[in-house]
Image 1: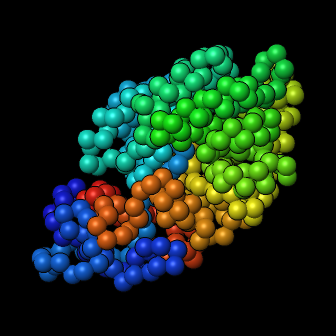
Image 2: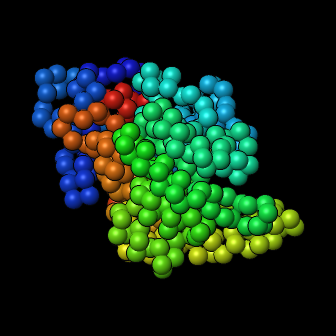
Length: 366
């Protein structure tokens, strides 16, 4: 039987981390679905051994996008395969101008929850990425992307204002409040790119569900996020690039460069303060712009470096992340989407960087 052939019965023999406090002795997958009861045909099962986790989640990833804008299907496929090889089997695509729905028909590619295309202020974001509009059109565009996406909409909450020479908020409070209300009316959640401090209070008080990066959190806004239950996806592997970005903009935008360096310098303290306050924190890499795909293990390690306990950092890419996105974990009847490791990732999250086998809908794909 080849690796990419579907075994009707698959046996995971070893320890199954079905939840943060739920460790089981193996599982079965029958026709791509999980069961903990020995099924008919068990004697002929394909058997994998090791430590099994739910397929990893990258909650901020851009399939079909590179630093210049949309990419062709072959490039998008390579991006998705790179994520899969790293154990990422569920992606929240946090904004892409490409139509990647053809991937939904591929049984060997990660499952994608799309946020549609970024919505940005005119000339206030990366060229070729976003709908670039003015505030009066925000509600209409949010409604459009809410209908096109898979339950999420992505705003660009702040970006460099060339006149100010620094990061500033992109949207007036009234317009963003109306836009978020419209997304919620249509059944979609809203997230926003935010590096700096200025946009955060208005976005949270307007009802936003999540903030990407969130490097601008302060002692004033951390309690507000916690009170409202607004999640963050810190993308620390992306924040690591801030010093290089700052150096590149130093001559033209010295205020912006200094601001980016300050945000970078306090990044671990910011994430730990958010975690300590009870803000939900999830794993995202920001792959697909300037960053390579397949960095999910590195992001988990960064969360641990920031002071998040290893088990909670694992949850941020497995059990907790899947529940947040409304997807099952390793439960009876769920799709058999899992990753097998040689060692216990709870003891050392760096184990995530070396998946032994990857299983998607009961199919051994890596």
